[in-house]
Image (cartoon, rainbow, N blue to C red; front, side, top):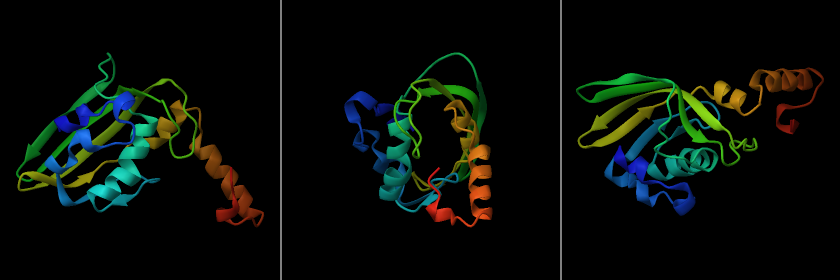
Amino acid sequence: MNGLGRYVRSRDGGDMSRMEHENYWHPQMHWYGYTGIGATFSQEEFEDFHQRPWLHGFGDRNVSLPGGRHMGFVGEGLYSAGGIWDVPFSINHGDYLGFPATKKMMTIRDFDWWKREGDYLIENWIPIDLIDIFKQMGVDIFDLLRHKVEQCKRGVQWFNITG
């Protein structure tokens, strides 16, 4: 998907148009993401709920640094998959899911599965290791969870817990 590489953070900001999603993604695409984002069921939802927040936090493209492991890409028929493990991918420039930027180079662990319909991608499943991403940002997700569980045990409703 060469379109993803056309995005330049300093030039494009929240504008996704240079990535030309319409040339790659089916209009009724479904993107099944990780907890914190969930699923999106159109290009508009994909851009609003995943792509813009992700690029705000990790907007570098075409980072080529040594390290990590490219696990390969495979495909047959309508399906393909690829993965990377501990690969440097972006500096954490902006807040992500409410957590402040670290300005550090981040590594990523993920694996994508895609389904094609005709010449377009119609489905994408992508489990990204957000626990590791947040660990790199200095956030212990399990500690936050323990804190929220303890608050709930004391009668504080989950929707009233701020941190």
